[in-house]
Image (tube, rainbow, N blue to C red; front, side):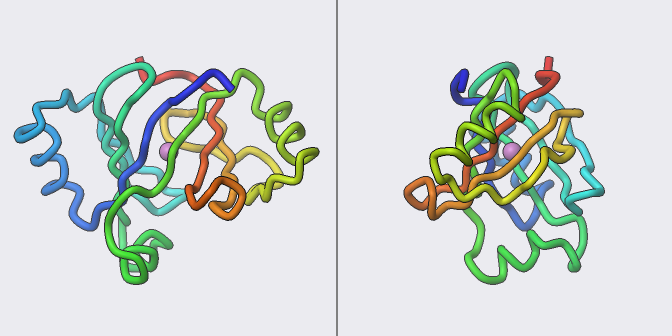
Length: 135
Ligand code: CO
């Protein structure tokens, strides 16, 4: 693992959350993106490692809408950057980590990602990410 790539915060109203992080916290909004495969809209603040990613359901049928209903808004996952996602997944699997994905899937920014269940990471959903960095 190379280190922290981003933290993701689940929000119900992306535009309101963007105003908070951009105008109140003064962070630089790098991009807003729709990820249709996950039924979410994503806003990314900052560049390089340590970005903040706001994730919002793109419709009522989004799995994220159900998560907000159940647990409310808040920290959703921590993402670690990996140089080789297949290798990282295999190494974690060997050590008994509860991977939520059998294979890498498409994430924001054209990256390949996979998730580890919170029960394997002391209560935090962990995303592994290999791919083109948000420049
Ligand atoms: Co993420």
